[in-house]
Image 1 (cartoon, rainbow, N blue to C red):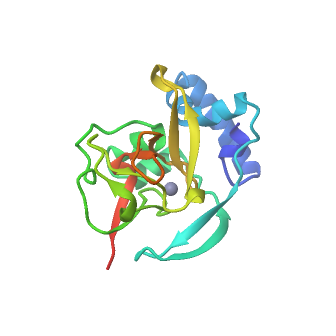
Image 2: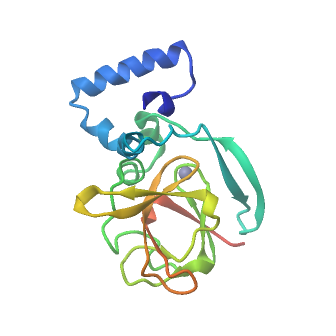
Length: 201
Ligand SMILES: [Zn+2]
């Protein structure tokens, strides 16, 4: 599984992989195990390793759909993500943690705009699909483009749920449930911490 997670390929990568393997062993592997757990599940199910290129749809800040692009997946080490992300965001986006209900900054936001990935700026949701779910988490009935989010089975915490992540960088966003409003009846229950709101100008 390490081959699919680290770039670039080559001697440097080989050394880094060896370092990570030994670091994981030394630390008991818990943090790395959690970080990689979705991919571990994929590997166990016989799914091919993650592609290094992904297709996403690019949107302008005003919400205009621009084009579908094939781009390299954003891959960074845990240390690099920690440096980049605000406090508290790392655990949610890179370790699939969940923010406390009603604690985030977007659950009650009704402004018109676009919600991008806090990690990589990939466009994720449009405010036109946001609704009041009463859960304390920002909720949407569909992503801005199906390509831009990836859904995987999540069996953590003794439940079977569908986790939603950013296609471009694998950031954990939240979960999707089938008790949403029309027209999709889906409820994308997101963490505010995983999102960055851009108001329509
Ligand atoms: Zn992202």
